[in-house]
Length: 335
Image (cartoon, rainbow, N blue to C red; front, side):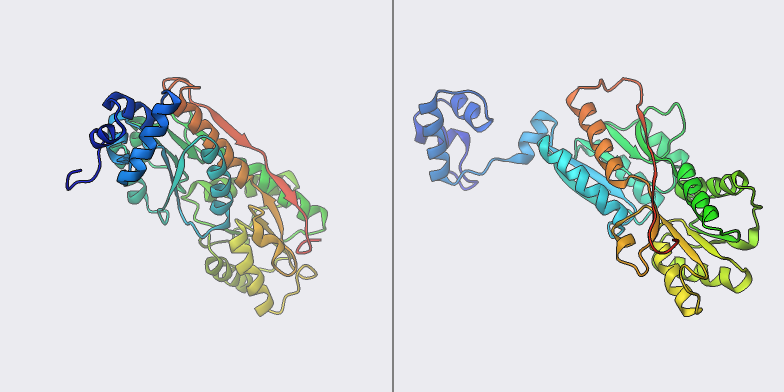
């Protein structure tokens, strides 16, 4: 054995078999039972560890999949991770996580880095889809699936939520509860979810015959503190009897602000969130929320990606777009 450790040559010598036989056994290919036993015993005795890097360079496969999302701490992405990991594990892949903090440049670097073949595929969940994203997606050397909306005609598989319908479910529910002064705490409208929720809110108000009033809309970010501050600004200038929040994190912040303002939920102000994450059942009162199928989106994205990688769907095949339908979970914050 040399200074660099055991090799298939030294294993072959110890086991008394050919190098080809050792290679077949270590790569999981068929071999005679007695040959397999001798090779594995020799490898164990010599302390042989397979060189996964060399193997991946030869096969052009790593058996790793990357998932790049904005914030690993967001319960939406945690729900996706659980489902993605189950699908990948069943297919023999490991999951690599990358939190981008919604930084476009970081997301573009992730896409460009695919040329290094450090993973066999990527699931990307961007808040913004820029021309740079579209250019990199077009020339990606490995399969990529986007969780989110991409323009029609782009050669990439995608899984998206129906935010517009989700907002409509929320507004109609509030209207049916007798609420007529519905405020909206949204995230940045230059993001995919922010733009979709803004369009959905305007359309939903029109559907129930309510006027859109700019004073009852406030923009924050998609985090708890952003929701709290946005709700505080909105309450300072507008009289509302309901608040729709662009996600559950913002709704948690809004609930805190309402308590600080001495407003009872739901007697004074009803509150509805979006995403229906685990947070919704831990608030007081429990949060009414629109489920956008986070877990299902993660599962379907992983399935699409595995199909591309394994050849079940040809790489050059038409892009597949899956729409996940929303559901409203009514709880104490609006009832």
